Image (cartoon, rainbow, N blue to C red; front, top):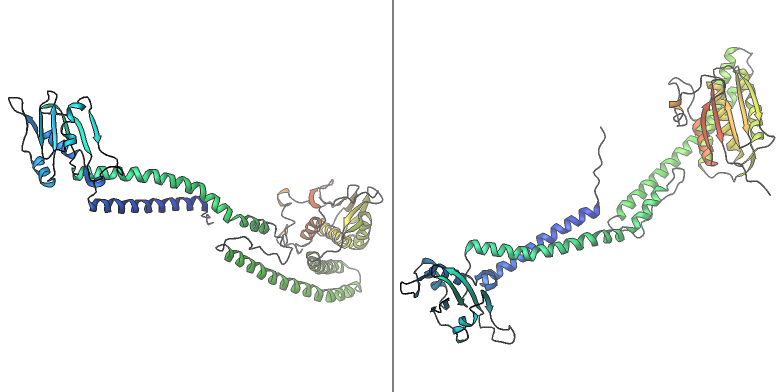
Length: 459
């Protein structure tokens, strides 16, 4: 069961966490400020300038003779107890007035002049006048005595529900705009900051994408990276170094083993050649040839994985003739005819001659091994720098044609081949900027086509 990677966007996650932190800090600061102001009893927080007007409004009545009177309500009694400096003026439409407390002279005769005003706040400039003078509140309201005008400068204590509602409105009015502004700034600034901070990470990632397993000593650069990322890059570089060391030990082991195998294989071939002709001798020679090929392939892997020889102009026709001459006895002994066809007398590419000879040798040996021991193995050199090796065997199923070039892959589980030859051909083709493919042969077998870039035309 495969695990699903839990990926996330750092910019989005960090932005939301910053916004959450900002909201919590802003709420805590406002709560502390509101609490401090409430404790100090400042009017902006827990004083209600309409409290006196509301109490007087519901306490006001009228006598039979038309005089305005105050009914002794519990709210009026509580207001008088909590506000010793209580004062107010009530004036109806007919000009009747009712007042209580010491009315300041500047507000005593104000009501008649403002009959047409429904509500107002009257006060002074904060810094130019006496700040101890409280502002007055004028409001026209409907009462049991009719529509009246009430003027007062006394502010009562705000009641619980109204205090909570007012505090909530104050909190939201300050918090929401500030939070929206900070959130917008965070979502704009955070991606920019992260992009600048991790600009060097894109370069490092590009270096990682260009690492080739054939190249040793590749390391990632830790320049211009945040300190938080440097340990990860360092750990990756340490892992790359361990891989290089392990691969070098593996290379030395394979090369030493291949060299050690070449001598006993050569002795074995010499002794087999001295035996009288027989079918057993033919099979033994084929097996010995496969051993020799495997040893050569192991050495080739080391040779081609390291520093290659400088590329030169190579005649593919000459290469094909040399390989055909070398493998003709083996092909004939296995029951095949070996044919060489060329489109022209000379077809050139640029590359390593020894590597190209090994690639073509592997293709011909593969045809000998899997061609069904019948028919003709044909080597055809095309004018466009292609080499086809065709047999008349059973062919290769289309669904397996992409896999046969993988190392140690076999068409049949009991196949005696090592599974390295075709992989070697593919690597040599890639080394030369070409490719190898599998086609259907004209007589039902398989056709392996090695395509190489033609050599540039010399002027």
